[in-house]
Amino acid sequence: SAPLAVLSLDPSVPRPVRTDEEEPWETEVLDAIRDKFHPGRSGMSIEDIFSRLDRLESAEDVLSLVEFDRIVRTYRPDLPLQKVKRLFALVNASRSGKISLEEFS
Image (tube, rainbow, N blue to C red; front, side, top):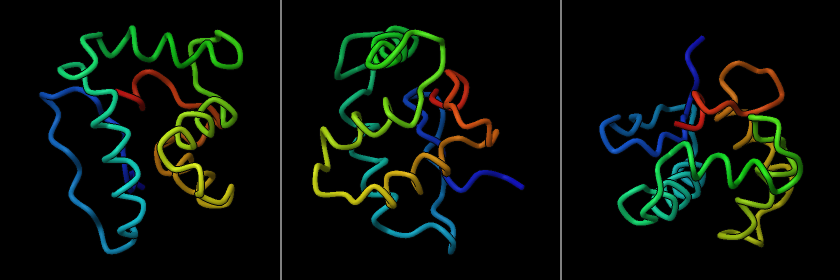
């Protein structure tokens, strides 16, 4: 099935329409992250942003749950781990347990 959300930072990719299954808080948190890392705001390419975020734990060309948790908690430190895991699952459309550049962008 199609993912409920994607974290796309690419300004040419339209933001996904919220589905009935996606909760408003999920959209709010993902939109905040999109806004902060947007290439127009950060002055960096999506690939550069991803590469820098990937180094939070270990540089392996994917974002782990630990790295994703650090990113989310930068903007929402009050968010319970269960909700961070829910966001991670939404973005990790492949269900690989790691967020790829494709899923990120």
